[in-house]
Length: 129
Figure 1 (tube, rainbow, N blue to C red):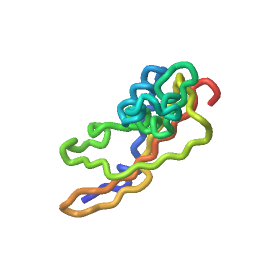
Figure 2: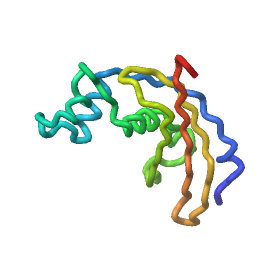
Figure 3: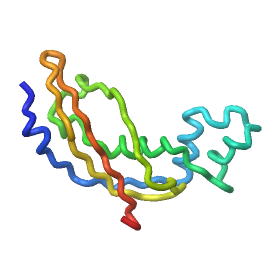
Figure 4: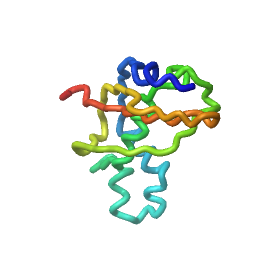
């Protein structure tokens, strides 16, 4: 039986996360950008001169900041990452740091198949707030 009150009441310590130009470029290469080294539009995601950040890069920061299976007090083998979404309020800088806070916003009991949790992770720029 799922303890909704316990799950929704869990509080996770804020986590500091930082990234550099190297991380941004490695992410872009990792998702397949610039496979064609002559594609000018993609070069800006992997060259330092005018480095742009792929918007989905922020999901890797949020994922690193999310609570672990131990925080949920469950077996990590029983976890399945089903979906994610993001809302950006400005462009992501090539170098930065954020404070990440996570909370469980919904918990659905799936009976013998487990539970489905929706976790929200909010990333706040460490310098500007």
